[in-house]
Image (tube, rainbow, N blue to C red; front, top):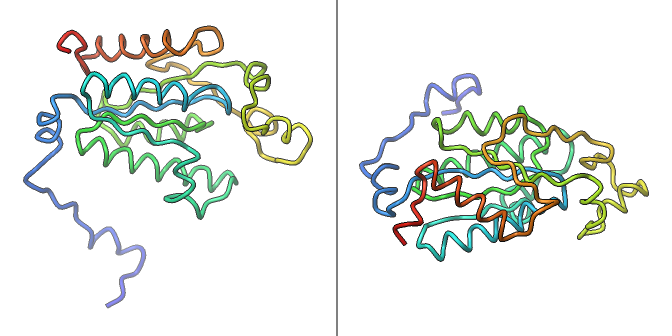
Amino acid sequence: MSIAPNEKEEHIVWHQHLIDKTFRATLKKQKPVVLWFTGLSGAGKSTVAGALENRLAQLGYHTYLLDGDNVRHGLCRDLGFSAQDRRENIRRIGELAKLMADAGLIVLSAFISPHRTERQMVRELLPEGEFLEVFVNTSLEVCEQRDPKGLYKKARAGEITNFTGIDAEYEMPLQPEIDLPAGEKGIDALVEQCLTELNQRGIIDTSAH
């Protein structure tokens, strides 16, 4: 039997299992959360997220890091870089991050995610307090100087189009939960800032380790 697209939702019901998010989180002795690292290409999102995940792992917390480039090798390999595809990329990652939080994990997600509406879309997938926007606040000038992948050079030469910060807009977060001055401070200081915020919010307790 075929189902018309507009009837699809009527036939799909979320199955509530006996083992839920609360049980999984309690088992791991932590609170699930999605740390959404956003910023320009070359801002240091993956670097900071990776260093923070390493520290959390050392403290005994259960984590998973979702990285923009890595995800495009598999889950989103069919997507390009048009506005529509980039939005779909973020939607998929948001849904994946939500499932990982449901598993009781601390999820670190490192994506440019240039538009506020897209980041808000992911925020609304999660309960209040379970989505923390982390702005890796590095200026365009510094990012261009770093240019670790040579992408800015190609964008300036017209070899890459629709590149965030050059010919595509990046909308800075207005009120991020964590604002990291990544163009001014070193990695260790940025990680400590994140840990302090997570402690204050009761997501982790470093004094217990």
